[in-house]
Picture 1: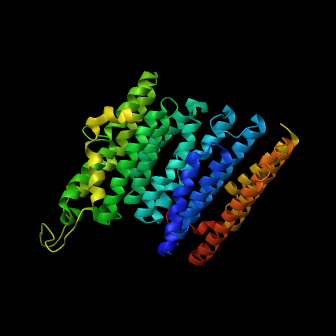
Picture 2 (picture 1 turned 30 degrees about the vertical axis):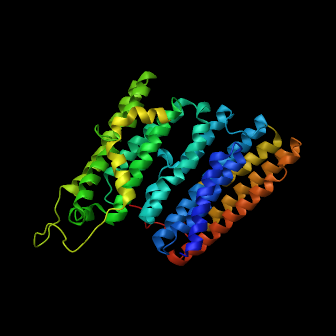
Picture 3 (picture 1 turned 90 degrees about the horizontal axis):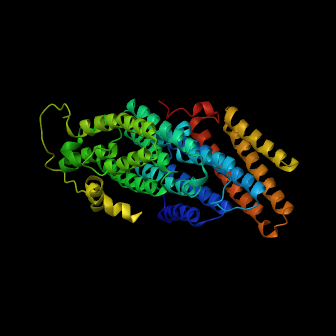
Length: 345
Length: 98
């Protein structure tokens, strides 16, 4: 792709999300979402390949249908209440709106497009898909979150965490596993959304950091399946060790960063007298933890069955890029500064 | 519910049902999407005339512009899939399943 075209596409990707962030009018928010969808399709089909075209087609159909339902719900709201402000949404329409945004985000009963689209595109485009493309719909969902029924959000969140954990168990492709991990994390985000939007923001922030770290690692190690992960300790031993820890942080084990949002969410749900929901969320995190553990096992604890045992590729020089090491440190060691992060949001 | 809103909602829901259940050709899915967008166009235009809000009278055109872009993108994807997969049957889009 020519750099000029790439620049136009990336800047309109950024501007579409910014348009949705700054708008208080539903039509403008819808336009931002549409510009986002239109801008990422050429990035997906950058390499003209049957799988990329198929992924782009599936992404386009779901996103266009979801955007149409979103605009239909807002016109319906305008027809009844006579205004277009995002923050004042009447309750029955906001259910339809939540379902439309859930299709856009890939939350559990509407999640089937996400693993297939992720499998068809490259890892760097997949990084855009699971981080930047989630921000605009989540901003809309946070603005209407006080009008949504909490039961709906809790049911969607529980289904997401359980299906996200369950679906990833059967996968061997890294991109599909990361897609299911994204579904599970979004379930955590939206199950707390009605009670404490600031906590959902913290969870989103931590999720972005951990996901960017993992995608940059997989991009650097150039490994599409679990099997190829076993070679990586000879390419870059330090990266193999730390990315195994980063996977455990994604699963939410205590001394690492990923434990913080899960801890706070379970505490807040218990304070809201929703202890059974919190228990189910914590149990479904075990399902996710199983496949993260499988990834980190083959990343750091297995040796490829080669004919002659060699430890390091002496002639291959791998340099870890600076952003990756920065993100990796944030992924691993941010738990002690939890009070600072809470005071930021 | 007024008659206009009922008619427009029925048109939109018919389009959505067609998109959801009639999954043979990609072209028919795109036509259903376009029908949904056109019903939304009529809804916006009728809303601004019924409520006498002339400041909103340009918003149907903005919607139409973006939905035309979307239709163009859909048609280009139709060309791309028929070049890579041989036909526009949605059954053929099964490379990424597992």
